[in-house]
Image (cartoon, rainbow, N blue to C red; front, side, top):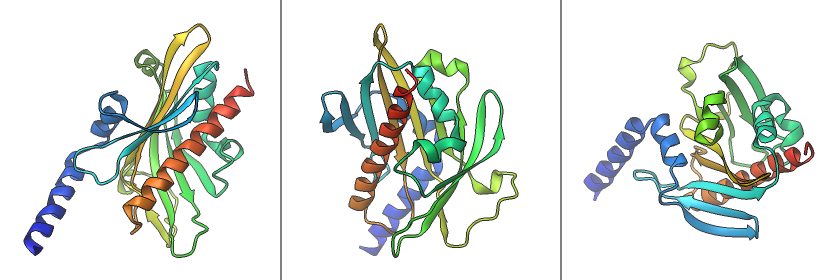
Length: 221
């Protein structure tokens, strides 16, 4: 039994080591193997997707809207205003490490506010170059190795550093002035939370973020 458990742990570690951010983004973008989880209303659907080698599923939320995708993209790139846009993420602190017209590197700290649950922090790279639009992508992001980031930020002692995760915002034109917008995410929040709790937290978090962004974009119509 101990041998089997050790072998399983080694297998999982190998999968995570070899499964880099590029692989993860490809898994998120492809439409294969997504399964319907919950219908929120007639326009909003939540889906999940199992990825080989991982205990947690990827999750997606999509909605049909009559909003210009560029308006949504501009909100996503403006990470310093997330506290104003993301009503459900008031504990989020965001900083820009580097930015040009192709991508930005950012830092985020999430204060838990719950007993026995550690704070979280991570560096991420968000890409938003215009050539992504040709592939129906507004932006995509992935977490970065803290050791490879040149910055003067000091880690917060009680924060768990997240080092594996990615997300992608997609759009599909259905008809004139009507688009299917989706946000797909894989995120392991780290720590020692049971998988069923992580799944619920991820489902709630992605929906709230998506809803906040779409509501903000609708103001600019």
